[in-house]
Length: 188
Image (cartoon, rainbow, N blue to C red; front, side, top):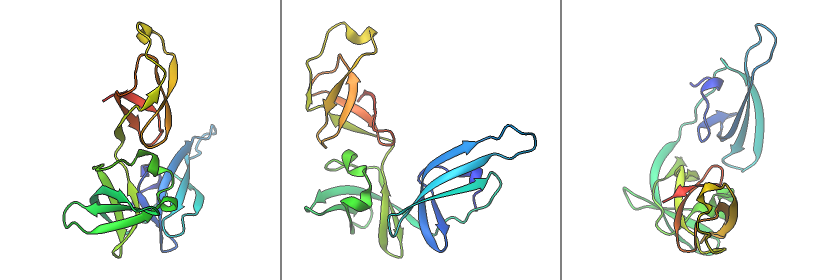
């Protein structure tokens, strides 16, 4: 049973017998003496998709949900749902776009390193790798000698998202994008 101070993004906690995924953790330290650090946690209900905000003291205990983490690979999109294949037994799981909650911008054909959260044989959600490699398909021409400045320009990626990249990058280059923040990290 983890303490509130040990919670990290992506952990699955059971609240009222329903699994909730930790989406955001904010800690606040009051300035008065003897006051304990407060943790404000934003959860997503893995069955209904609703958001839930809770506050805890650092030493409050929470119950971790009984879920199985399985390595999966993205297979295909059949129009209304995204299909993932278990890397060990080749079984398939599907999630629709609403259940993926903004993660579709980082899912490309054959993407590996995805962890599926399974409860009672049903997929509740996925955890993406920390970063993904995507090719720039459209951006303004690169400017030579601009690596010394921190100016950026917009670049469109194959999944349709637009990120800010340094001016020296050109169309066709592959970059690493952080899946948590959705920002450019480096060249791949």
